[in-house]
Image (cartoon, rainbow, N blue to C red; front, side):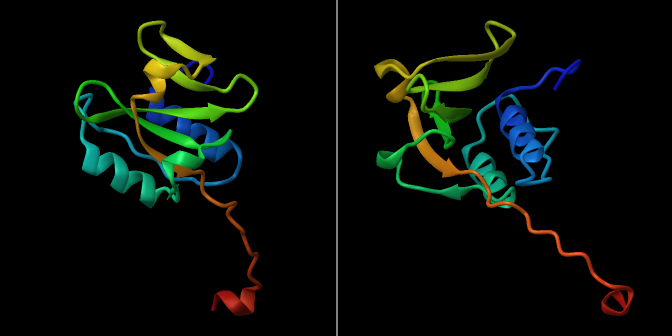
Length: 126
């Protein structure tokens, strides 16, 4: 977000919000890996699990550093790579998805389907 910092989860949530796919927000989580919470919150935000063997541009990838899932990135088609918030560089970056990064993938999600907002008439609201 312009003028505000964000991490990898924040990037995915901002993208989903900007595309009108989800208005879910999740703050106050630990910097320590919490795999069960990560997957549970992804489901609550409307992300849908998919087969890791079928990754395409726009998918949300869950990655591990060391043992546990602790990072997410968005797959890209243009560079056969990923876009993610890189703590070491202090910004969002895009780079090739090389073998080192591919080996870290432990989960794959589809972004939520667009939210269909239906305007109710006054009578329907009562």
